[in-house]
Amino acid sequence: MTVTPKIEMARYGAKAAAADSGVLPTPFPRTIGPNALMYLQEVVDSGLTVDMTDRFEQAFARAMGVAHCIATSGCTPSLHALVLASAWEPGDEVIVSPITDYGTVQGLIAQGIIPVFPDTEPGSINFSARTIQPHLTDRTRAIFCVHKTGLMVDMDPLLELAARRGIPVYEDVCQAIFSVYKGRTAGTLGHAAAFSFDPEKTMGSDVGGCVITNDDALAERIRFVGQARGGQMRPGFGRVHTVAGYAYRMPQCTAAICLAQLEIIREQVAHIDAMIRLQTDLLRQIPGIRPLAIPEYQDVYSCWMAGISLEPEAFNCSAGEFAAQLAEAGLPGAGLGKYYLMPAALECLRERADEQRYPYSMPPASRRFSYRGEDLPNAWGFLETFIRWSTFCAKYQPDDCRRAAEIVREVAERNRR
Image 1 (cartoon, rainbow, N blue to C red):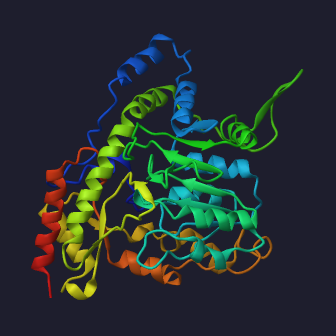
Image 2 (image 1 turned 90 degrees about the vertical axis):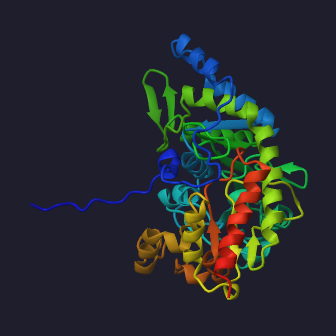
Image 3 (image 1 turned 135 degrees about the horizontal axis):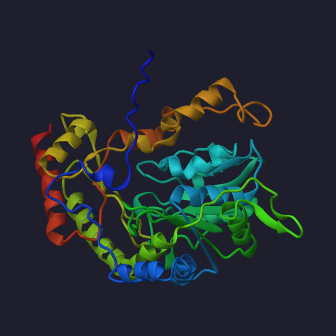
């Protein structure tokens, strides 16, 4: 009898955070908006006839100052729905931030679109217009811009570059809700944007996501192919499916929680911004430690994850050993973030590209592709010394920021050359 080896599957949300322990706050148990029970009761009392999802969509669109919000069942589905609505062809290329999460690229992979990963700016977690420029081809259909950890990409040069090439910019705002760039809110700068309301995110619900846009036709297409399963009614027959669609609709109870969370999120983000700036200032004072730099153009930093980079020559231990000591000293979930480098993490794509399997065969691909971490020296080098810890959240107070910096200082002094 053959025994199937058990896979250690990735964990998400509260399950992923269950093992985190330490002296600093974690998001769980989540703080829930005070009206959540009232909205949930309304769903139940209505016998599921109330349209709480539509109510949330309207409220979120107003909060963002856009025409459309399409609520989905999660952040990964929201990005997939955006890809579906764009009607690209297999072998087409989309520029994607190299340091991100699988959710950013899942929809591209599912539709046979080839993700192209430019390098990041030196010492940065984000790419830029400068690093993107050499990767644009006549097959480039869009730019997927990820505001990683809540730090916003420098958008104006990127938008100018995209406009010259006639391609849209889509923002992945899953970690940056209500971050602000030069007075403009994250998600409102590009042609469309995707958000996450998964339980570990800043505006966490039980699950959920959405797409926002001012493009009427794009919004209608997302609803049709991403929510209505590509189904439309034909007289005398009934429902026919003119495209292969999906049912990425946000459940009513999820919408009720999201609506309650929306009512408290702005105050939470303002507090998070103040706390991460305090913690950044404290960490910057420790020799050999470089906290994530907050750009001058970022008015509000809706930080989802705090992190530091080590100057390797300053310490006599590896970044992994340093992170383990931070966790032992009380920084919950302290560890490396190498898995965020998509060219290194996407083993499935590396195999396809190396073997030139569809869509990496020619055609539909226009050339050979390679997915290896070392192909992006800036991003690879950044993550070699980058340490992050559990989600930064609105529970942080000044004493927590000082305690985090104190822990980092203690470990740094213990391992200093």
